[in-house]
Length: 472
Image (cartoon, rainbow, N blue to C red; front, side, top):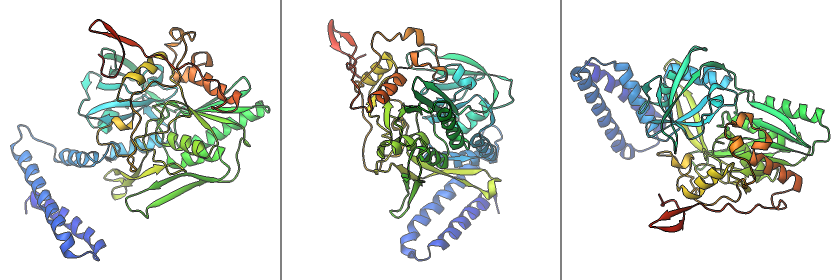
């Protein structure tokens, strides 16, 4: 028997074995789909056989089949993927909160590696890499068209070694950034007082997130027993583990639902609840989000907003509201399948997917950012990713619009341009200033509003016109 026939036979056996789970279905209902599947598997065997025999140079059969599996799974949505054994091990290291690399959360979009968010206190953050940047090369080697898992392999390695990334950024020429790999132990939580109000920043949801946020708030309360409220900063937080999202929300909530996930079948609903007991005993809370806040960060922001426990300030979040289940293959010996199996919904039943969490007070961090939001029809978000899942109920993300607030001309942006989010002080953080204003005034509705940013103008055919998304 040829290798092609062996391959088809093995796949046929899997299909046949899988059909045993559905013996209640009629043969008539399954015959056509099964015959199509057998035909396509035979086609796959034909193509593999011809590539092996006729390609200009010898090929690695294992790599070819792994690439085929990766292509099949990644065609479903941007977050489903096949993880080869090495990639599966890397992912496990990341969630444990320690690994060697640069400290970047990435995704793949149309064959290009895109940064979701740099992690606080890492080489990527210190180098000023930004959400929405594209990585087009690593050490002079193009990564365009490379699966994100393979791009990650190029960026990770021995601590102390240099890695040069080629970055493409909007309104800039491509440029190189040289970073030095470190053992990444993300400093996930930072905390301090801003006058009478506490400030806690969480940069990611690894296995330590709930414990670290709890410890930070405990310290603030002991040092400042008269603390009047808290700003919880989830900006550029790319998410992480679901159980940690529930655990962090539980810190602020006195019981009740945090999030639900709903799968393929109507009965596939799983609800997650907080336990009784609010650690802050009802002290007012404001949550900061932006377009880099994704997944678990959106679960927490959405839960606190829906349950009226906190108000949200900043920009609409990323909109990554899908659930991925990691399924080890042969106990992990053959890697794992990361498969989207459900969508997340906030306690009020709103889907996070594509639409994100809209703030109660929309605040741009800079005047330039306000201009981009007003003039760019497609914002950096899940909705702009190719083949992203819809929101199920058919809602769409808000398009180009003038944000409610942006820094006034009296805010010295030039002096703050070189400051990264991880090292921001309140003097250079307009969104944080407005969050504290909300705490001082008791609510968003009671906070005096600033004048809405004026749109920039452009000259077209000698006439001054309001700048729109179509004006070049």
